[in-house]
Length: 205
Image (tube, rainbow, N blue to C red; front, side, top):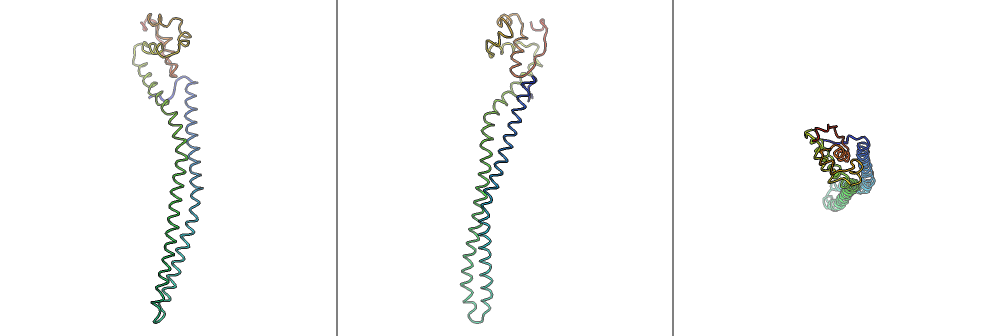
């Protein structure tokens, strides 16, 4: 599989683009983590409420257990404290629920903030990059296995702009007819960032 071009300036551009993609992804991951941490701090209020409810309920239960030891009236006095402790338990559950909501919000905000810009750049960049890898890998295989460069010359004539064809060959049609494939093949391979091997005039016939 061909990952990078053989032509230096083409390869350097690909490497810079890949590094820019990595840097872009890393930057947005860090931003997402920072936002997650900032939003997650809001859960501190829920933790305070939870601790307050837990302490309130525990205190009332403790008082109720001591009141229950009072002769005759103890059990009847304990019941209100037990009921009041339920309010503390409700407060404790509310604090926990608030923390869970904040944790979920922080996770989604951080993830989406990182995922959206990274996905957009991948959507714009990755298809062309993968297409080049497929084309270059196939071209390399054909260039190694084929006896001549006829196919690449034909592709050059069908795909490359006319001014590019004229730049490498004064008469592209005559070059194809005469079997002079090398200039046109070099042009097509150069558009993929690949180098064409030299072939003799007889081998091109």
